[in-house]
Image (cartoon, rainbow, N blue to C red; front, side, top):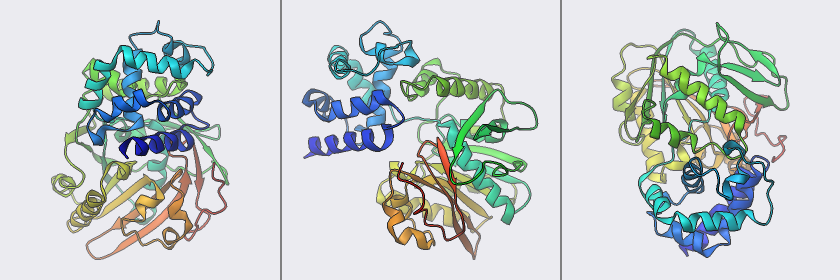
Amino acid sequence: MEAERLRRLFRFFGATQSAGRSPVYEALSEGVAGDDGLLGLLLDTPEEQRRPSLFFAAVNLLLASRRGSELAAYYPIHGGHRAVDDRLVPALSAFCRRHRDELARLLSERSTQTNEIRRCVALRVGVDHVQRHWPGPVAFAEVGASAGLNLLFDHYDYRLDGEVSSTTSASSVVVSCEVRGASGTGILRTAPPITRRLGIDQRPIDLSDPDARAWLEAFVWPEHIEELATLRGAVDLAAATSAARVVTGDAATDTARILGELPGREPVVVFTASLLSYLTAQARTAFVAQLREAAQRRPVAWVFAEAPGLLATTGLDVVALRGPLARRNSLYLVGASLRGADRRHDQLLGLADPYLRWFSPARDPADDFDWVPTD
């Protein structure tokens, strides 16, 4: 039964996450689903570690130092130029057999660690919404922050449909995103003053550790040479500033306490991107309770980029999530929940690709995004 679940999981990953984004991972996802040997490798790891993203990152990490292998020839980020063909899946199988012990160790010990810089577009949209309701300085926290690169979102430039929205000075990091169903002009305003920047993660990435940086880079997909350059630029920028820090904590048990330790009374913007998919149903409920507890002390705005079906379980007061929108889990909803001691305002702001390759702004507060194509 677990093997069949894994087959479905990899096929879902290939069809909804990889299609149109990575021909290599699309083909490999289907290949893993049909390879009992590769499934056996995954079945030998702890249940919570059996994730396509973690498996492909472990392989990618080993490939970085084995660029002469047949498999690396399919990875442009490792200098490969070979197009997907019928040798790709056998090359993966052979590579995994050859390095089975190393892969088993990585899959048992490592955790998923990504900083998808494009998701800062969702954060910027959410922060702009918060500013319309609560103008002025804000503190900022990200739950599931990994290396904390999104904490520097206002240090990056943004290119929406080719138009660059600059920071106060030209940034070495440019975040690109296609805007669908509207013009990109005027979507992003000037970010507010940020009084504190704090990340919370179960296993924070130490950017001074070369091995930790290599593991972060392992989550860049095979064809994404530009994304790798963006990640490295953001890492270099983070290394040059001490403006942000990431502390160890659990979303379901530590969020309220850590937010409560932030000085000041200004609102706190709490950002999550894909966090809910890593939490059990019980932990999702507990995380929302943590936000509610924190909002008893000071205003809290939860800005999110998450799967609709998971958001529908969090008690958001949004009519559209009670209908078909909650089943569109191959896409992500961007929105904000503004919470005070005795009031709350929830609003969906847009629909997006999970990696923010594109973003469709909401046409009105009650938009159910039925007009946005599935892809």
